[in-house]
Image (cartoon, rainbow, N blue to C red; front, side, top):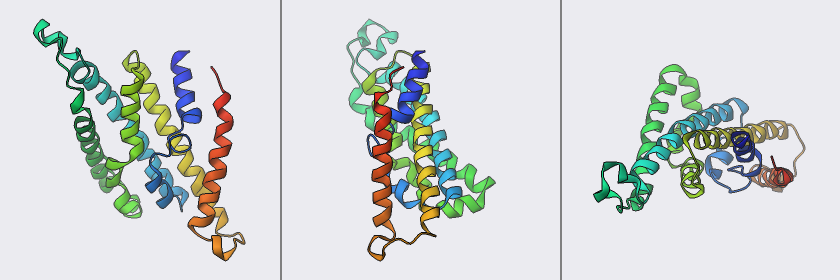
Length: 204
C-alpha cells in the first residue's frame, strides 16, 4: 500500500512539472509534436528509473552520515554527503550518454527530431531533482525509491505528452496574434497546473 501511495503521489500530487516546475526548458521546447514529446518523455522515464535507484544505493552505502559503517567502526562517523551533487550528476550523465547512443542507433529519426534536447536530459532539473528528493525524503528501502522514480518519470511523461497534444490542436485554432506560440502555451500550462492541484487532496 505504501508503494502505491508513493507511486500515485509522485505522478499526480508531487508532479515534477506542475508541483515543482522542474524540467521546464525541454518541456516547453519539445512539446510541439506528440511523437517527439513521447520519445523524450520515455527517455526521461528510463533515465530517472535507472539513475535514481543507483543514486539511492550510493547514498545509503557511501554518502550519507554513517553510511560507511559497513567498512568498520573507524568509518562510522565519516560523512561524504558533500559529494552528493557531483556523484549524482556523474551517474545521470553516464546513463544519458548510453540512452543517446541507443536512440541514435535504433531510431535516427527520433534522435534528429529531439536534437540537442536528448543530451540535455543530463541537466534536466527533473532528473536531478528526483534524486535530491529521494535523498531528502529518506525512503525506507530500494523498492520505495524505485516506485518514486517510476512515478516521477511517468508524471513528467504524461505532462509533456498532454501539452503536446493540446499544442497540436491549437495549431488549428484561432489564437489571437499576440498570444500565438509561447504566449498561449504559458496559459495552457498554467491551466494544467491548476487542474493538477485538484489531486493534492488525494490521500491513499
